[in-house]
Image: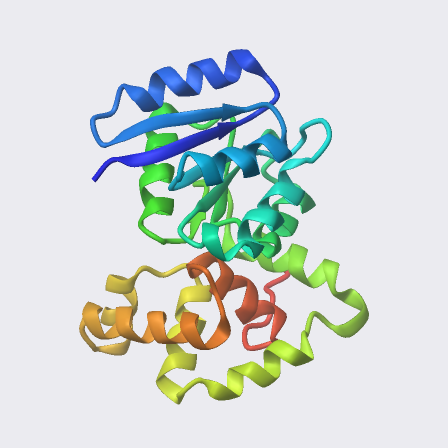
Length: 227
């Protein structure tokens, strides 16, 4: 199956470079280019994109607004958004995750990292660049919700729908662990972990693992590490 990629960046030269890289891979193809967020949303629908590489700062409708529009549209439920940012230590990163992005990657990343990011996002996994950590994400979440100690009462209540094992798996997901790693930690099979993750996503209304991470912190299930 070929991964259909949409490029959204206001710099034509950068889009051209990404196109050459993506189109060089046998399992993916660029299906469109957008210079602003509104065009990205439109092309995501028209071209049935699987993954959108989305710049944050664009004229008109920016990447954050476009990501929210894509995430809120049921007809685009299969679309995964990877935010491309110049500054990885950036509050925009967390805003993007809250908006529905599957993760983010620095524009200075190696070509292999970008290609891997596309494949990871297309597979429904959470994507954080190699130089970013879950602790960083947690810190920004905490800062963003300082007024209520980082807790979202509605999401805390929704955690009550999870079984004890699902909550346990959610904590591990929020820690950045893969299914195989979680399986080893909990002494169960990777397939069992995958089942629990999928059920947690369905119950909590999460699009992917990145959203599970956000929910885990915003609900207060996992507390931010500030060290």
